[in-house]
Structure formats: structure tokens, C-alpha cells
Image (cartoon, rainbow, N blue to C red; front, side, top):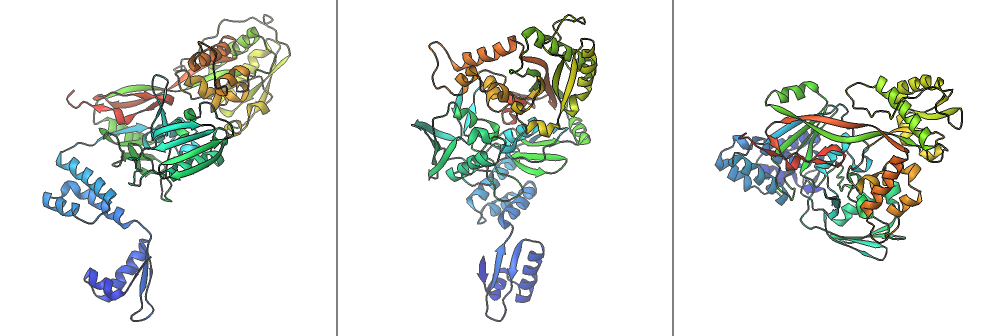
Length: 513
């Protein structure tokens, strides 16, 4: 709240009191301020700022920087901006002076995310955008290790995880990352996210100072740092504005029903990416128009797997599981578009060749797979087997535990890391797979037990566990989901990250090619 005499303000702006009054009312009508006029001569009026006026002025100046002279640029840099605004302005001026070309790409999205809250990620599209904007406390390396990212040091003391934040990290508005921000995110993950099961083991979070906090547990959890390296654990700041703020290389500049635009985050502590602007859009014409400007190449990313998962509590033999999954694969091949590389059945079957312990099987049916299961039901009649549908909507399926479903097997889609040990860890921690298989002793050895036997490693345990499930035909692959995007042919160093996302920050644009 700013308290002032109208005459003092009019003298500052070098206008009359009447003109100043009109300006204040106009700014109030434009929803920039809340203005309470003085009730009598000599009484003070008040202003409450609704919008960040400095950021509005800064945005306008940045848009005009390319058209300004050197003298005008120097004058602007001498204005009394806050330090974080000067940082952004200096970066913009440097790019203009050095004639830095701001590269941009347009990425087509059939299903554009409606929200971008890391703790509620449920689609690959959300994960791709979140990866560019937000960062996690830890990160995963390509060789299967967990490394510190937003923290400079960590240590376990009994059942407490002590975290020390890096001091040079800022959000995209220039605010420094502090321990209170991390506590807010972790508290939200514990109570209001899609991943509360992983985080409600935290008993308390104590902020020691701006750069240290302590996570308290009843008992020391195994591999908790792995959870803190996942996209859904990304650190963000909610300022009450339209978008959440992150510390990553990009920040949201526009978000509507047809597109999400992200631009380089001038406060990012790492190196400046060559691609300054990324547009994720469902507008086909915009994608085609963008691709007309240059030659493109097709980049494929692996973003998920579909497979048959059998209920381990049902009394089927390996041969019976093989038969049922083979028959389902035949049906999928006949119904699904031929461009998909569907797994082949192991062999063909004649009526009467295979018998199962009961005269029916019960399957989980969702809208998208119902045509396949209807064909499956017809084909199974030749074998004297009735197929009973257990029908749910996709939302009901996602929000229900498999243990509460009386079905023999599920046609499942999951997105998980393709490298061990993270592949098995993902399946046993945040995929629906864990609802049927997470409580087995072999699974508990991976996720709960602190020590391994001699000559064992986490990677070998994870490999052995999943390999056994696959060999016994409890888990049968159907097909791999790949997403293709068109990028300029000059772009190199395109790195695919887990879950089919691309690290746009690392792309190099070879304009001399």
C-alpha cells in the first residue's frame, strides 16, 4: 500500500492534480491498481498495486530492444530496475548487440496438456513440457546413477535426510530457490498429488535455514533419492500468477487451449540453449507452416510400452498364460492399425488343444480396447471358454487398485525408464504394475531391504526379477509406443531422455551445414 498526497504525486509526474486524478482512475479501470482517493483537501490517498508494473514495463522494453539505438539502450540500462530485471534486460541487449539468432522449433501435440503441475503429471506430453521448465533435487545419469542436482550436499543421519541446497539457483522470475520452496512442494506431494503413496512416509520436514532442510522418517526408506529424481518431484514456485515458476532452462510465456510456448529462462544458472523458443501446439497448420521454412528430419522417441499383465493370484500355468496372451495378440493384430509393430504370437492353436482350469476368463475392458476384446470373446468360443467383461472407464481404472479388481489379466500401458535398475524400480514404485507385484518377497528385496547378498547389485536384482516375470509369461509385450517429431535437419546432439522426452537445452544448431 502506498500512501501519498495527490499534489505530491502530480508534481512528481509534472501534471496537474486533476490530470493525476484522471490517470489514477484510468489505471484502476485497467486493473493495474486499487485507488482510494482522498476525502478532503490535505488528506492522503492510497494506491495498492495489482500488477507488477516493473515487469510490464520490462516486457514492453524487451519487445522494442531490436529497434533501439545504442544510446537509447544505454539510457534504459541506467533506469532504476531491480537487479533481477537488469539481468534479463542485459541478456536481451547482449543478444541484440552480438546478433544472436534466437532459434525456435514447433512440436505437434495431438493431446495438449490442460495443466502443468509436476505433482499431477499423468501423460507423456506433460512430462515433455515439465522437463524443459522444472528441475529436481536429484537427477539420473545415463549409466544408472543418481546424482545431486539442485542440492550441493546430502547425508543420512539415522532416519533423517539432510539436504543442502545450491545457493546460485533462481526461479524464472529471479527469486532465489530457498528451503521453504522445497518444503512446500514436498508437503504437496505428501497430501495432494498423484504420488502421495511414495511421499506420505515423510513424517516431518524441518526448515533449518534458507539453504538447509531435514526430512524425517520413521525408518530410513530405501532409494528415496530415486523418487526425488522423478519428474513428478520437480521443484516449483506458485506465486498466484497464471503459471507455476521453475528453475529449468525454459519458462512458460504462453499457455492456451491450442499451444504452450516456452522461452529461454534468463535466470537459468546453466549455459544458454541455442533453441530459445519452443512451441508445443495442436494447430496442424502452424506445424506445417513452420516446417516449410527449412528441411526437416524425423526423430523417433520411445515413450511407453503396452503389455499383457496377468494377475499373479490366479491359478494359471505358464502354457495357459501363453495361450491366452497369444490369442489376444492375434486379435490385436486384426483390429489395430497395421503401422504398429505388434508382437507375434508364439504359435497357432486348434480347438481342444489347450484347456484351462475354469470355463471362463475375466478381462478388464476399457473403451479403447473393447473392439479387440469383443473379437477375443468370439475366438475363445471355439475353445469352449466364456470371456466375461469387467468394464471401467479409463479414469476409473487409473483411480482403482488392481487388487480390488477380480480379473485374470489386464492389457496395460505404462511409461517407464528403459534402463536397469530404473526400469524395474519404476514398475515397482509408480506404475500400476506394483499393485499386483509390489508385495512379493523378491520385489521387497529391491524396494525395501537395505543390504544385498555378496556379489549382488541393485541392477542385477532388478534384471533377475523382471526377467523371471517375463519368462514365466506373467508379463507379455504387445508393442512399443513411439512418437515422431520433425526437427530442422541442421539440429544435432538430440538427446532422448527417459520417458521419451527430448533435452532441447542440449541441441546444437549447425547453420553452416
